[in-house]
Length: 369
Image (cartoon, rainbow, N blue to C red; front, top):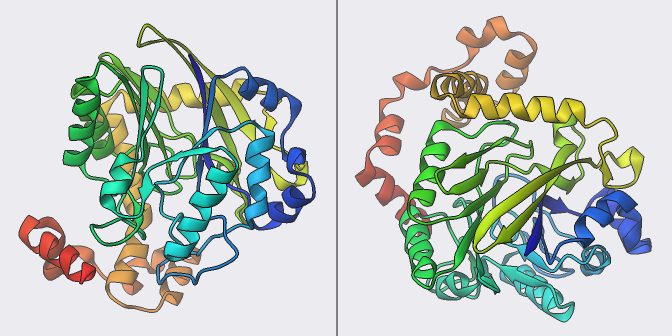
C-alpha cells in the first residue's frame, strides 16, 4: 500500500474564489502525479466547509470556506481528511455537521470528529491492515460526552487506542495536530511523547500544526514525522517557511514501512498553484540539519530555549493583561524589554496554577462549566 500525506489545507481567503471557478487550477501536474500514484491520499482539512453557523468565541481567527471548495479535494483524488484540529469547530456544531455531510456526499472519508466524544473516538479509518487515528491538542472544539467536536489530545486515550488496534495486528498510523506555531522543531516534550507512542505500538506518526515543516526520525520500529507544514494556507506573512513544505509518500509492505519519499512543495499565491520546488537541494540540506538537531537532545533544547526567549514577551503581556502596544514596541526596540515586559518568574500564582496538577485540573474543568 502507498499513502501520500499532505499538511494543513485551508483553501480560503484569496484561494477560495480561484478554486470555486476552477478546482483543478491549484494543482501542478508534478504534484498531481506524485499524489495519484498512491492508494490513499490524506490531508489535514483545517477549516469547516459551511455557509451557516455562528463563529465561536476563541482567540485567533475563525476560519471557514464555501462548501464548493471540496471540489479541489476531489480534483486531486484526496480520499481521506483528518479533521481533529483547532479550526474545524470555528463555526460550532452546525459548521462541523455541514462539513461532515459535504465530505460524505463527495465520498471523502474523514477521521477525528463526531457528535460527541464517543463518536469522535470511533471516527477512525481502516484500510487493509492500516488503521488511522486522529487527535488534536486541546484548543477550541474538543468533543465531550454531550457536545460535538474533535478528539482532544490525551496521552492515556491515545495509548489505549494504539494498543486496542495493535491487539488486532494492525499497522497503526497516528495523525496528530500538535506543536508550536512558527517553530521548525518539536519541543523536547513532544519528542518524548511521540517516542512514547512508538514504545506503545504506533508504527507511523504524522504531525502538523506549526505551519512550518519540521524533521523526521526513525525511532525503534517506528517512523516519526514532526511537521509537514502548510500544504495550502493563505497568509499575509512574508516568511518563506509558511509557504514551503513537503508531501510525504509512505510505502507499507507486510505491515512495515519499506520506503518513504519526500516531495518538496510550495504554494506562493503569486504562482497560482501548489508546485513542486524547482530547486530541492536547499530543502533537503535544511531538513537534514533539522533532523540532526532533533537527534541531539542538547542542541534541540538550545533551539527550544531560543523559542522560549522569543515567545516570552508575548505570553507575559497576555498573562499580565498589559497593552499589546508594549509588545509592538519591544519588537521594534528590543532594549525596552526589561522596562516594559513583566517578569513571568515573579508571577508565582500563575506558576502554581500551570505546574501543579491539582490546580491545572481544576481550572481546566472550571472552563468547561
